[in-house]
Structures are given as structure tokens and as C-alpha cells.
Length: 127
Length: 127
DNA sequence: ATATGTGCCATGTATATGAAGGGTACATCT
DNA sequence: AGATGTACCCTTCATATACATGGCACATAT
Image 1 (spheres, helix red, strand yellow):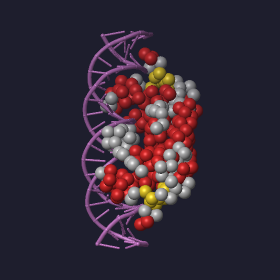
Image 2 (image 1 turned 30 degrees about the vertical axis):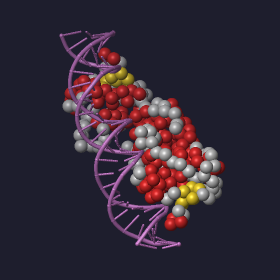
Image 3 (image 1 turned 90 degrees about the vertical axis):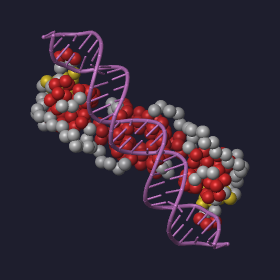
């Protein structure tokens, strides 16, 4: 598998990694069970920080695209192909959109919605 | 009616105004039909900017707590007492809270939720 | 010893937002 | 003339977040 990082791309580096690995799995360039390069190895190859690669791997594992097995390395998840068609972003975007529309219908301004959202995310109690 | 502003209070100035006026209406210190000080007058009394007072008045009018009648001044809305018991902030906070909990249950990270929220608020299409 | 993933500490940069203030101008009516 | 609410332009400051980076440490198994 070839992974290329474009520094000039407005997409964050870790997101480029996620996207490319997902695409590789979707096109069967990476089959379930295949080993992926280690975090440190890939970071070294791409000349980026290991934390950035780790972040990408963490998200991919959360989506069950890959599996990390500690000292044994990282592998493509058995159900990777099925799971990589699930667009979590589209799901939560849809839910948020519906809620925001409802709030606007209640007469709330966008500013108030943003404040309330921030409060909820930070577990702050409403004023 | 007495209005006091506390610069050291973390609550924004305009929010302090809104809160105190709402409270005055709720406790019948301000009855429907009563006149409120003009924007410039109140700003001068409290030694704050007229824009800040105007912002508070704008929000109060949106919630039908007060009515502005142009050159005639600003008055307490006929249905002020009923409307000031409606806590719009609590309503939208509740809606957002439920949606955010659902998104978290879907496995979304807080960061992803924030990004998606920002995209929806800005009418940006999902990546 | 070496490599694995993972954790926590920290930094700096950039962007977006809110809050507050300053200034000017308008149409309106008294 | 003077007061009313309102609209537009602008700046300044503080805050929050995302992104990327760096160092250090851990338990694990080879």
C-alpha cells in the first residue's frame, strides 16, 4: 500500500491518513488480516509525528476498520470492508441538523444555539 | 426599578441586563405597559455602551418581554409575565443535550461532534 | 535490547467566536 | 432641536478549539 501526505492539502494530516487507509480497504488493496505499518514506522516513512499517525489509527480502530494488538502490531479488521462504508459523520450531521432546525424554529438565535451547545459539551449547567 | 451591573461577574453585561429585567417583570416590579428607560439613558446611567443595552433590549423583545415603539420608547409587553417564564435556553439546551448523547452513543468523539455542529451551523456541506 | 500500542505532560500556531466599545447616520415624532 | 430605536462601518480583547509537534514513561512480548 502506498500512502502519500500532502502538506498543502487543507485536510488535516491524520484525516488524510484515515481517508487513504479507508480507501485502500474499500478497494481491497488492504484485505482483512493484513498487517499495517507500525505507528512509529509509518510516521518515520511519511516524516510526520508519531502522535499524528496514532490519532489516525485510533479513529480507524474506533470505526472497526483496523485492530491494534499491542506489541503484535496493527491489522485490518475482519469486518473492515463492511464497516468502512458506514459514514458516522453523515449520521451525526443529520441528527445535529434536525436539532438545530428545531431550535431555530423555537426562535433561538444561532449565537444562543452555539452557547448552549458549548455548555452541553463542557458539562456546564445552564445559566 | 433598580438595575446593577457587576463588571467582575463572569456573566456578560447584556445577559445581566436581560436577567435582571426578566426578574423585575417576574416579580411584578415591572408591570405590562410600564415604560423602560431608553437605551441611551440606561447606558449612561450604568456607564456602559449603548450597543450593549440595545443588545439586551433586542433579545428581550424577541422573547416578547418588552416592546419597542421607535421614538415613543420601550415598554413592557402585555404578555410579559407569561413569556418570561419560558426559558428558551433550557429548551434548546435540552434538545441539544439529547442529540449529543445520541451522537456519543453512536461512537462519535466530542471533537467530531463539534466539527459536525460547526459545519451545520455554517451551512457547509459534510466532507 | 528492541519493538509494539498507549498514556500523560507540555508547547506553539491558526482559526472562529463572543463580548464590548466607538463612531456615524437614518426616519420618526415631540 | 432633541429624543427615540435602529442600522451600518470599524477595532480590541479574551476564550475555545483543532492541529501538529515534542519528550518521557509504561507493560507487553519477541
